[in-house]
Image (spheres, helix red, strand yellow):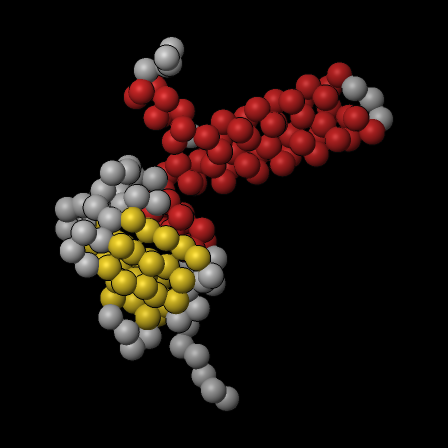
Length: 170
């Protein structure tokens, strides 16, 4: 039997990384202020790492738009695979040519396109879609803040989030 209402539990779980960072930074601050020598230095380090975790946790929370959408996302060995109720597919992270956000479909969709391949449409609220944050963050030259702003602003048109730079042979 749980003493926490399900909607409160869901909100706490959504902010889990940021809350862990607050706990870590708080413990570090207490050590930094109340201890001396090595423990004070360790406390200061914990507080700094906690602040970084808070920042990353807030970004991850902004990326999560919900759950329970159609399909399941699976990321493994530099491949993104989407198992949808009507369609699906896979794309290689290394071969990605573009990432776009299509807000007009219900629910909104991420469109991942490989060079010369078919686009893969993934609903933003698909099960495990939050794993795409790590995939997108690893793309060279992506502007994470722009991606999060576009995701939350619900634009009227399809938005280009990232394009690979043209690879030259020589």
